[in-house]
Length: 333
Image (tube, rainbow, N blue to C red; front, side, top):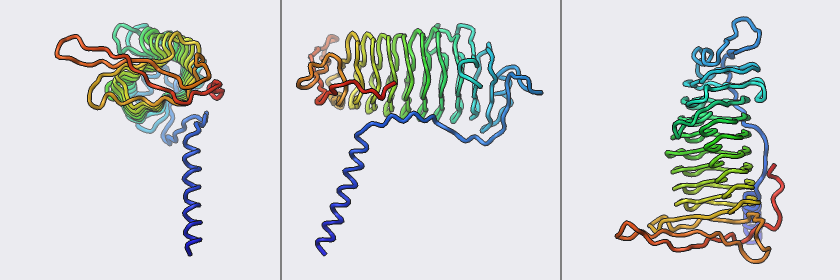
């Protein structure tokens, strides 16, 4: 009887170990997010009888659960999505929403809405939250778009949680690629390419993001975490940025399996010496092209100590990647 109990315990132990090993190895799946809408389909452009000529007209007439399909062409307008619809273009290279050069081009204010297969350009930068795509609701999907040459942000999330941003290309947006702020939690930002701009991916006062398998290149800041905690930054390729990753008063983030290549500075951090804010970030198994292949990789930063005067004290501090990768990861394409 004891032999059977022992065998059962060993079986459970092996299963648990296999699960832990599987969880520790990152998998680079490239499947697209798919939703089954099941509603009516409204058409914009094309030659069909009764097709709409403007996207906003179709959105106004749509109901929750409908799909608005937009044929190839250039649509010079700004749009606001106020219903849980799927707005999909025929082809992201040929279906273009072009703004007037000021303000936001696409506003998404409906929970559960989705936008697929568009090129979006012509957003302004007069206000800090101007963007090609402004998301102000939960559970929004932005997938397979080209967002380029906007004077503000590429994508701006404000109090928007549980959103999915996948397979987007963001190039030449002045303020940067993707910006999350004001308690935008539990978002998935994966398989995107961000090139040029002030910040590639910025997370401000927002927690529990999954930031995986993105390419962020030629930005002032690759990934910027500000007053944000418990975010997973995994499998990203950060190259040719002035700074690859900066944790600014951001703690308990997991930063693992990333490539840091040809950045002027790969990574740094700054913290307050305050209850709950001295906790470290976890750095592990990242590839650093300046690592000497011996020992650990030190990430230099500092701790700011508040005093009774207006001037605090800065203390140099170090966090450590205990087991850096010897070769760059090739799954990041």
